[in-house]
Image 1: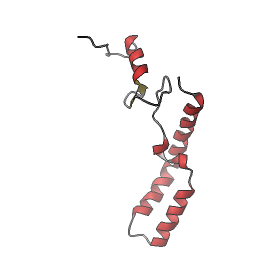
Image 2: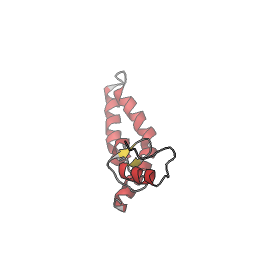
Image 3: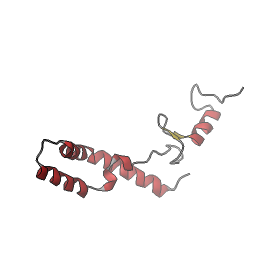
Image 4: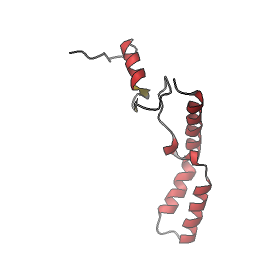
Length: 101
C-alpha cells in the first residue's frame, strides 16, 4: 500500500488540473499563435508562469485504484499489475483467468 500522503497529493493535483485546464489551454493557444502580437504573447507566457505548477495535467501520476501503487499500472483498468493478478486469481474480474500451458 502506498503512502496515504502521496495518494492524497495526487488527488489534489487531479482536481487542480481539471480546474485549470480551460485557462491553461487558452493561454497556450494564444502563445502558439504566431499571428498575435509579440507583446500579447509575452504577457500570456507570464500569466501561464503565474499559474500553479500542479495545475498541469502531466504532473498527475497514474496510480492504482486499489493499492495506490504508482508503477506497473494498466491504463485501461487503472490497476497495478499486482492488484490485477490478485483480483484475477480470486475471480473478481470477469473473463480473466490465470494462464497455464
